[in-house]
Structures are given as C-alpha cells and as structure tokens.
Amino acid sequence: MKIEPTPITLGTSGLGRHSEPGSAEERAAVDVAVDLLTSRHGFVDTSNNYAGGRSEAVLGIALRELGIDGSRIISKVDQDPETGVFDRDRVLRSFEETTVRLGVDRLPLVHLHDPYSVSFADSISTGGAVQGLLELRNAGVVDAIGVAAAPVPLMAKYVETGVFDAVLIHNRFTLVDHSADTVFADAKARGMAVFNAAPFGSGLLAKGPHSGAKYAYRPAGEELLEWTERLQRVCAEHGTSMAAVALHYSLRSPLIDSTVVGVSSPNRREQLDELVQTEVPDGLWGAIESLGPAPSPVDDSDYA
Image 1: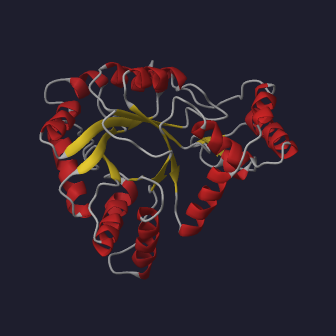
Image 2: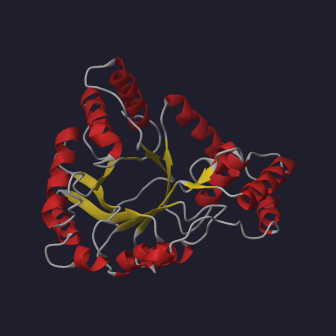
C-alpha cells in the first residue's frame, strides 16, 4: 500500500456545482473546501469531471488560500466529455487539466474513473488508459494509481491485473448490498488500499425509506423500502440511528481502509463527525443479520 488513508475520506462530487468564478456561490463552495481541508480527515476526494471541473477549481482556490500543497487531494482521470475517448493520451490530458485547476504539480493518488466508454481489453492494452496511469506513476507525479467505478465483475478484472495500488467501489458494500466483498478481499490480499464509497446508498440509509427513495441511483422498490423500515426499527430499538449503523458497517470492516462520504457543507461534515463518534451496540449486528439479505436493486450482470 503506497498510501495510508484515514478511516474517512471526504467526497466532493457536488462541490462548486452551478457556481461561476468570482460569484457568491463560488465563495460559499470555497469555504466548504477550506473546512474539509482543515478537518481531521486525511484525504479529500474529487475528480476531473465532478461538477464539470468546478470541484477541482474550488479546491484549488482553497489550497492557495491555505498555502498548502495537494498532498491531501485524491483525484481521478476521466474520459473526454465530448467524444468519450479514454486512452493513454486522454489520461495524460485529464491529469494535466486536474493539476492546472488545483494549482499543483503532483498528487498522492489518482484513480482511473468510470472506464465505461472503452472495453477492459482496450483499457489495459498498449496505448490504453492504464498505460497513461502507469506513465504518471513512473514519472513520479503521482505516488499511487487506483481504479474507481462500481460494477463488481468489471472491478474484479482491474484488480486482478495487479498494477493498481488502490481500488474504490461505491454502493456495493453497505447494509443493503455486499457484492463487493470478494473484490475488496482480493485487493486487500494484494496490499492495495481499499476505499468504500457511498455507505448510505444514495441517501436511503441516511434519510430512511420515503417516496421516490433510491439506492445506488436506482429506484428503491417496495420490498427494499419495507426491509429498510424493519432495519430502521431495529436500529431505534438499540438506541441508535440507521445512518450511524450504515456508516459503522463500513468503518468496522477489516476489508476497508477508508470510507468515502460526500460532504456538501461544514454542517454536513460536523454531522458526519458525530456519526463517526456514535457507539453502535455489538448486539445490533446480530439483530440486523436476522433480517435476512436486503433485496438490492443492483444488477451488475451486464459486466460479468
């Protein structure tokens, strides 16, 4: 493992969205970024395409105001937003765009992000996206490289290459869906850093069942809503919130090095810290197991 993450990594996918340079909205976003970068958590996670590049731009302003380097920033290279091209040259351009926005020369970790516009074979071939990442690491401008996406069968293939230092999967290691278990176990055995993102599953496990609720960006069906209602009651009976339990499900796992949680305001970061400090009774985990498997709406069979 070339990096040593802390238990929580702060996500910034919505940071700076709909803000213009110099606007009051940008100032508010910069204030959030400053709060995240001065928190007790080790890394702040962003991407070339988050909020159309505004996430990185706002973080760059915060870095300059604080007078610090990018050693706490994790970012991701993305496909060309216009053409969908995702090859070696695009990876190098994406990284350059990122470093210019952030105002830094190097980063501790950069992920290959959502490589869905190309086949796995093309991605790992000569001239493919993975080659670009390897060149960045070999040049010393990144300390480590990772892969960040969701479909478990696809992620298993990338982990099995043995070339990555880290892996990030979202919505597949939660109270609702455990399908990332085997990939995370393989990554851990290879000495990779394991990041588990979206422990609240698009909000369902934080807000609770409600009309229009989603899990992993998909509609939560009636069976899942009913299961979540039972989960919520069990958590309440043990004197804690479902949100705290959802977070600690990831924090307590020996497979997970860091749990990635999106934060959109200083208040949300404070709420997250409260959840981290919440004590979850040991007996609750057995009570949750007695509910049986949740009817997850996730279907990764197209990537098998």
